Length: 626
Image (tube, rainbow, N blue to C red; front, side, top):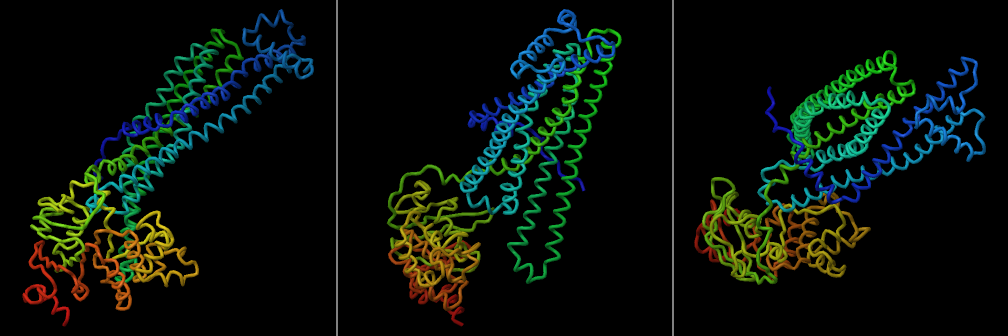
């Protein structure tokens, strides 16, 4: 089956993000470049020592074979260039510092080369330490900033965005894709900073020892780099597909874990495992193709290096054996940078490949970051106080083409309790979502204390609301912190008062660690009723003007429901409350009962009024009584 074509890969977005990070952390980058240059200098400087060392060793060997003593200064000066003469003077000075040195001048030169090599090793080790530490931390800092940006954007996105996404794929973006980028940057920052400087150092040494070869080396490096661009584009495209397959694999595993009870109850182990194995096979196949593109690039780079090296060998043979324009020590100096250039280019190649992998990973992340943030979260007039008067005027709303709410009208005075009832799909939860401004009406308006909800600052409005849902959610932390999320900064006395009002304090203090007891993942260490009463305590601590209860007791047993219902009665007292309930017996005391059907209000009034009308509400009530 042919895979869908991926967008043309581009390093542009990645380079722009890198540039912003470079500007932001310019001090760190400057230090990284400085120590990178020093590392290159201390690494290449010992190669230059090959020239005086090889000349001295060669001269001493020739003199010994001829049975003559080493040349004196007059004869020596006829064969040595300025560098060799200067280094010999340095060797003599160093020998004096060390207490006289050797009788043989050649051994003094060898000793000087050894001392310089040790010094370069020590100083190079220091620079390597700083380059590794700074460059790796820069890479981690960049990816950490990206994760924070993703987390912030997730919080700014509207709820409608999450209804169109698969949770496993989003988790994969935050974990797998950013992990790929972090590994890539950690590797790339080392090679991108240091190895180009190493190549430049090789070019300088070659130009000094054998100027004619510089043109061959200048051609050889681009020849090795040509496969980078060609195969790098494939690496980026295939990396995107690989990460997409990883996201699908993560989603398949997420479905198994979150639905494990259903999987076991309906004996779906084989089906779900087959889906997971299928997505894993796709991931492995796409990974194999990406690795083939990287391997082909490395192979082509090696061929380019060998071609250039062969040309240089022919040139060296000519100028040494035929032309005689360079000496043996110059050849020795030339061979060292040629031997290391391939390794530097190979590391740059690898850095380019991992950057292209990062470009593929960033494409998926940028797709999330490009999703428009919730416009309701920006702007608006201040709302310091909320009395609780609510009015819905001809409110229409649709998730797709078919309207879910069709012209809802409702007026609620501050402190009243409104119950929303009706069959599934009638629009009860959508009405609550609009009142919380998770969405905005597509027609009509919702007024809070006479002000259109779309005109007020969302943060100010939400500060006066609290929600208790059918499925209570607790964070994996202590009981104290879960309650305190209702109002960060609350005192222990206030937390305990809220817990008492929610009928949960006695249970908490009976635990070995009291309020420091961990609730577990999603409250797994507690029963459903205990979890619900903790969420009620959180809402009580918030002290909201507007309270929203979404079937808060529908999943509880009778004993738990009684405790929770008493806590809810405490919570609703003096607040404007909107309640969704399937058990009509729990809302008989509501001030207004609104009966919804297919997005319209078919009845509204008190419990007694609606029973007297002998309409839809009475039929629902009697059916439940039976």
